[in-house]
Length: 289
Image (tube, rainbow, N blue to C red; front, top):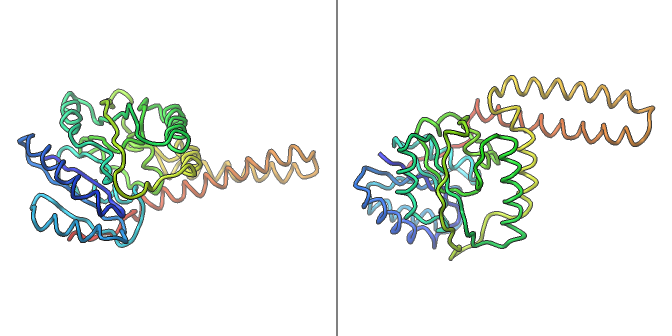
């Protein structure tokens, strides 16, 4: 079976056209499939549209989150609820073209664990979306070792066992597939054409770049062993605090440098703690309708 996971938040006008395109594509595959919409605390008529579609199609499942928890939690809910051997993720705004799904699956069947879409011609503003995304992609590839050129492309296909390893905290979905512990040689890319959003507003802005940097600094400490990583961060924090206290009688410049290092340490410690809490307690609370 193939499971399609689609997080949606206030996408009332985009869901039905996307569903029709998606169904047309999946029916041609001649394979069993399910479509999982995850309603992430929408405040418009998104849930009503989803209920209507579900009533007409038994292959559609709707997960309703208890509140708006963000894309990472919605993806995690869909991944952990999926029944397919292959799991495909995509956005609910219509920018991901479902017609590329067969290519992703075909590539996955060559033996890869993850296949990621690569948006060659993005239909988004350069300075607020494409430039920050390009910088983030380079940084993420450098830190994670996974040479995916477009981690921000939601159109991805996975082996089912891959996506059920990690509860993804807010913000860490930007490191998919590296967050799942796959190796670079297990990941392939398929070029896709990005489409413009027809309805609604994007949920992203340039401030997300700073969130990427924050999570990126934490990533090396949590990806393999969160408990051990958190312990290392605590030790660094105590060590830097000790150095800071010793520097107080020294020059103002040295004190400021150590203060910045200490602040970064505190940020990493908080983020690592959040990651560990997510693994213990989970990141989603939803009901299947």
